[in-house]
Length: 182
Image (tube, rainbow, N blue to C red; front, side, top):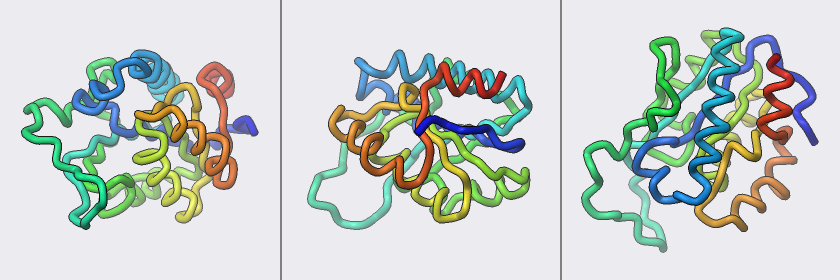
């Protein structure tokens, strides 16, 4: 279902578009970064909150899949320059998959009377899905911009878009979302 409306106070949440992660998915990254940058510009033009999320750690629990990636470059957690970070942006640094857990994100959104959140970034089935589940549980209207997000595995992206996201929000394209913001 396409995004039916943009609430008067809607925030854009950009997940993990940082140098170290964008470098892991070079094929999809240019389009995701470009579309996200367009969305960021449109939200800023309307004076709507822009949340830039990066990850600088991981939850401590044991997993079946090894997580250690070796020594990370010093700029690994820096946001990609195309996002053109501004002083008015909300910067959230997370140490888990979801952007709401143990961060000030919910408080920052509530302080601004946000009722809807629009997600873009990477990875669809990890950072975005984890954050969106929390947003939905917290009572926000949730929307996803399908062509402004990607996953390391295309099948994981498709599963989130086709199976899970319709249960918690609305899904649309960059072009259609920009029209709603015009």
